[in-house]
Length: 248
Image (cartoon, rainbow, N blue to C red; front, side, top):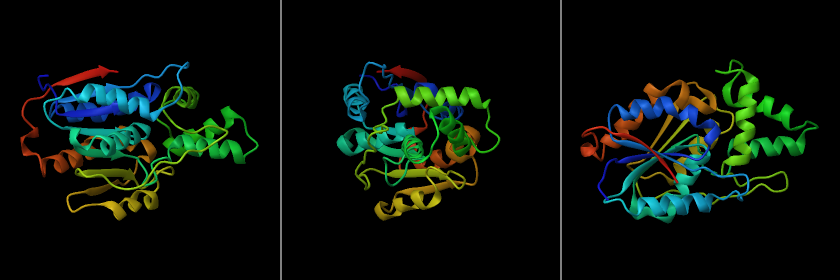
């Protein structure tokens, strides 16, 4: 397979992929990047493993290891893939992924559903504030609809009946973990617990604002940090630029 890209941005949340685009566009100005999308139907069981295996079917054709990047549950898929197939991953960049990987916005939603006398709509309205702050970038009703679809179509492992766990720990390849000081889902303590597994070449970066979707609000600031991280160990990465969108 000819190598048309050297970075893959994972997107496993179809209803929220819009929030990835500013960062993808910024990175595509500097290097060859593809966006790999996992689309799960309502008839399928929610499975991170299935997404990982579909990604493997694609990446095993690559001529060399690839830089992986993902936000939230997409980052959890990237992390799981990197641990399972380290020979295919040049580096791993995680955005808003806790050192306890199963702790996503979905788990917070289900915890509130279990603890509060509130229905789905009410909890999702509250979740919008948690994820975006008091001044969300779009109307609350639109964001509630998008989050509701993400509960149904992303490969999250949680439900009203059970909250899942995933193993903690690091990875063998260079790792960059990014978060926001104002993120109530992956808050600063959850972010900095990654220090327990960092290697000398790894990096933690914290955005001063932006809540859970800081990569949407500050793509340039974040993008500069990510490019600097990649360039520190892969200076040949920045030759030419191609952007592709790939589907499983």
